[in-house]
Image (tube, rainbow, N blue to C red; front, side, top):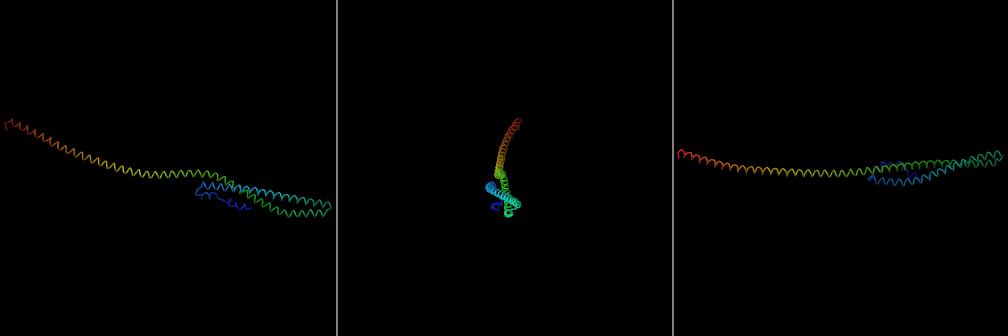
Length: 228
C-alpha cells in the first residue's frame, strides 16, 4: 500500500499555511490545484483498486465460511450413515478451512482498513480542491483590489509631488506680485514728487503775477493822489 505513504502528507496538509507563504498567491494556488487534481486521479484509481481488493477478500472469507459449514454438515450426514471414514475426511477438510479462515479474516480486516483510509483521503482531496477553487476566485478578486490600491497610492504620491511643486510656484508668484507692488508704489511716489514740484513752481509764478498787479495798482493810486 505505497499509496498510503505517498499521500499521508495530504491528510495533514494545512493549505491555509501554504497559501500564506506564497509570493504570488494567484499562480501558486493554480499550481496547487493542478497538483491536487493529479493526486486525486491517482487516489481515485488506487481507491477503486483497494475497494476491489476488499470485496475480493470478503468474497473469499464468505466462501470459506460457507464451505466450512458444508463440511460440518457432510460430516454429520456421514456419521448418521455409519460412514466414519468419510466423516473423518469431511472433518479434516473442515479443519483445513478453519485454519485458512484466520488468514482470510486478517486479509479482509486489512483490506477494510486500507479501503477506509483511501476513501477518507479521496474525500478530503475532493473537499480541498473544491475549497481551493472557491478561494482561488476570492484571492484573484483580492489581488485586483490590491493592485488598484497600489495604483491609487502611486497616484497619491504623484499628487503630493505636484502639490509641492504647485506650492513652490505659488510662492514664486507671490514674490513676483510683491516686487510688482513695490515697483508700482515707487512709481506712484515718483509721480507724486514730480507733481509736487510742478505745483510749487506754478504757485511761485502765480504769486509773482499777483505781486505785479498790486504794485501797478499802488502806483496808479499814488498818481491819482499826486504823490508821485
